Image (tube, rainbow, N blue to C red; front, top):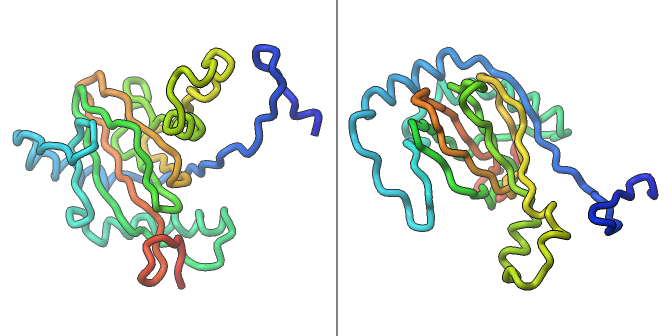
Length: 213
């Protein structure tokens, strides 16, 4: 256990329990064509106001805009995910939505609770100009909720402000625990950044579970 001991600012500490995120790759040819057709049909219309409590600029369409035959694209990935985490029953997509980030669009920090797992599929993504989803240290959210800035010496707790992101390319799909708060940085290019997101959190009639027969 002593081998885990590290030091930051001469303060001994242990870094335990890294968060596991899964990454797959899935062909986006049909998905991209569908999303571009959808986008071209409404791109000249203004975006609607964002829901109360949100702070973002993004064109989003929810489940009803996504046909079942395209949802079925994810069956293979979900089966791989099932095997990778050791589920004995099939995981299901409960909610799914399409995101199109135009120039200057962004998404504020948020989580997908009460889901168990969530996913982001990078359908149109140029790693030279776009940034992947950024994840926040969950502890930062806890301390920010409980205490004001005068409670703690932030210089000794810089790890609470740490963010992390995975290197991704177009076609990559990441699956992560739904409690992880994450955000999308502003798109500083005219190149569209398009993703499909979904939650995996359903068994029978209970939306707080992750798998079903």
